[in-house]
Length: 552
Image (spheres, rainbow, N blue to C red):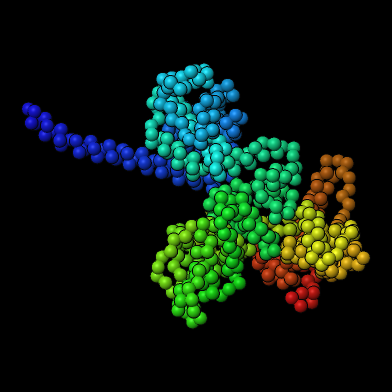
């Protein structure tokens, strides 16, 4: 009987072992899924408050915790920022209390705390918070950014001892490391957003500038504050960023701001314009080449990717890259590797990629001129830099900046700017964006008489466009006062018709200016059928003066 029993046991033992291994694999797979999901949320979730809640919910789901917290502050002065229970609900203030003894220890030492049963722990059992809260199982890990903790992730179970295991601590530490910079950024922006009600975009922008280096970004408009908010959030991560916007808007400036606020700020920041070089030279510039790989390759050359290892590379006008180079760039994004021109040796590289374009990559993907897989790799985070015509509040700030900059360069002291000069600029659509404004100011300083800038120092196209816009405003009809319900209906219709007409007129005018009077190009840039665009131009009586753009 014993022999038979032993034989049966030996037959079932491998099966049980296999079942245990399968269970371990399932657990590991589940943890990897959660890590991937949190990584995805860090890049995709725009609502900062929701992001932090989702992170805690995911952690509690894996660890079987009753309560989860994100804590922010110093050892002697910290507070809970996120408080959740096992059902994914926010806790009342009376219930949302952590063990201050445990959190203080983590923030002081920077080391995690793992408590199997707080009631039997000789070091913690006498703690007032442990006793008062009836705590049993606790896990608390630091959130470290730079060289010291700024907060902690804290989870607990009050009803069960030994609820957590060593592997749970390892899992939580991995997640804390993965999300530390993004959580810090989200907490900072959440702190700002909690006070934004009733505050201007200027005040919000000031708070962002206080916490982040946006010294090279000039602007206080709502659209620019939105750009800075998103840049501040993505900067501490290693996410690839695609910056879109018209030519001359300053896309490289936001790329540099992202770099300066990143963990790679002490490493190289290299830039290259993908549209400025032919394919062969661009490939050599990006990836380098070996001696003798082509005529003129008299020595080995290090490419930008190799030179930027550990740092950041900015690819301007990435849409101009040839299909062959798109494949090579995709390989760097996917696997962090490349080959030099003329070499079969694979080189590894750790580089963060920021890219910019003034083209619509989604349209190019549909046309087959830009790889779809590369497009989605580049646009993990997309930041749209608004054209100057959409942020008129920033024109006075930019004007002051350029006047100061170029006055010093040419050795002139500008004492006064004619108000009419500013009015003309406010009416102008700036098809060349900030770059055009910079040129206009530089020209005005050179031509200014007696240290005084006047409207006569403006280019003729700015003056002419301003007069057209002014004429449109002056020609607005006066809406009569309605005295009956029937009259009100009529007046509403008339007011709506006039408002639409004014918006259409301004739209057409700006599009034609940007396209230098070319109707086909204007229609294409505005995604409008050419015949429809032409009918609208005729309807509004706009005269396209092609001679004006003949020199261009």
